[in-house]
Length: 230
Image 1: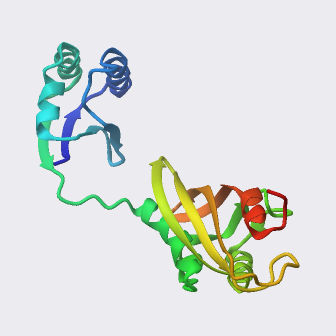
Image 2: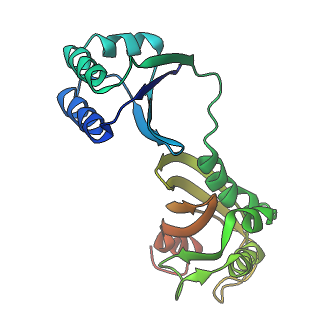
């Protein structure tokens, strides 16, 4: 079970505390068991510092605490604090990765005809970068029109293979599968089943998606349709 430790302290020397974190990260490379660490300063009280560290399990956290570098850095941290740090130890019982879910929904739902995700999740000035298009597609309405064009030509789905989230961006690897049911680029319906692998990166801002970058095998798709030689 994922384990999270919250460390709180008060200090007049936050910059030195931050440098200690840099030192710990450098010195424990390859041996630390922490998977994610964040340090925040209280907006209402800049001397109130909160550190949140995530581990795969409580046992992994204990191994991390046993590293000599961790012990030394902690003692130096205590020396920078106005009072002893406090610890809150949490077993993680729920972890909602909201941006990953939003990215998944933007791919999967419109393919089925549910366009509500476009209005709910795309920023009004959303910009879609797809090298297969003549230029960027801008705004939810234009994205909707583009998807409807594909849905006229194909009965298709997105099969999500993997997702990685970092900062304000989510990368999703997918396989697109579609049956050619209508005219596409001048080619009449063939009822062929087509597959194309690709990846989409969405950038979030204030809870909405501001940009999307697409990379996919358009050449392979055209070859399967007979539009290009194999």
